[in-house]
Length: 125
Image 1 (cartoon, rainbow, N blue to C red):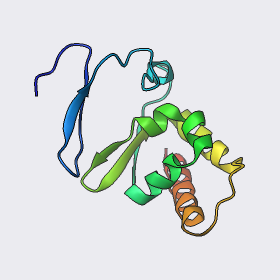
Image 2 (cartoon, rainbow, N blue to C red):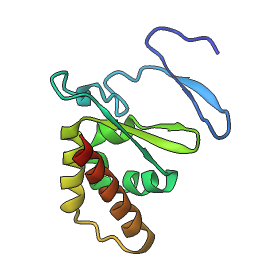
Image 3 (cartoon, rainbow, N blue to C red):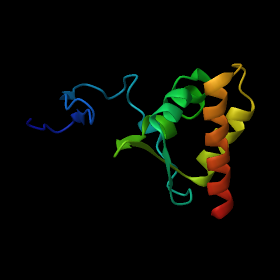
Image 4 (cartoon, helix red, strand yellow):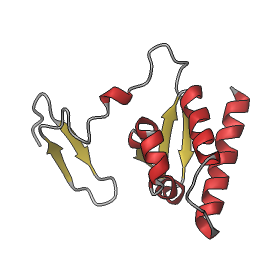
């Protein structure tokens, strides 16, 4: 695959499918306005299970409140890597605390696990 300036290239780690995205600037997939604040503290990495990430991604309130944090996740070695500043992680926790979407069963357990993990990470910082 040949890369051209201004393209975003992608590769699915599961199936190996790949491609490039053209004319993304200014579209729904352009998350540059949500880039981390350069004056924010360094990013902290968390490893989530694919099912935990799927639950977070499936909650519209989180996708709208934390677009950079969720959209910038990467899949590596069977885990989803989430990187964010302390401020972003605290905002994620506050958004989860104020969710209007009722959670039950596996979704509730997954979100509770993520909340405990993020809170423990913030305590260690």
